[in-house]
Length: 88
Image 1 (cartoon, rainbow, N blue to C red):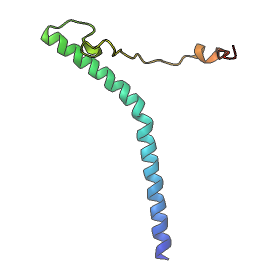
Image 2: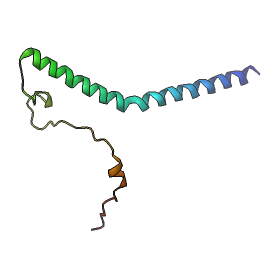
Image 3: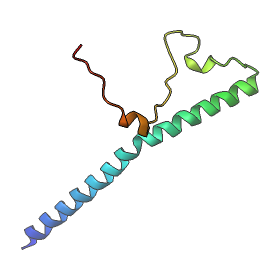
Image 4: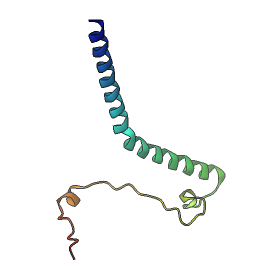
């Protein structure tokens, strides 16, 4: 009978662990967006303090191949449009 209790405890623990991991992984995209905003604000503050007012200094330290990515917000209008016809 003790084995049944331990098996139930392990199943409950694994279910709870799965729920916590799912919750954390679900929050990662919004956390990364906030982190990007925070880093940009810190870079603007650093540029203001040091006197560098170059707008593109945060885009990769002078490397032209690095470009800033802008987040794309889904909209109702884009969801209502017909998908493009790729058949030619």
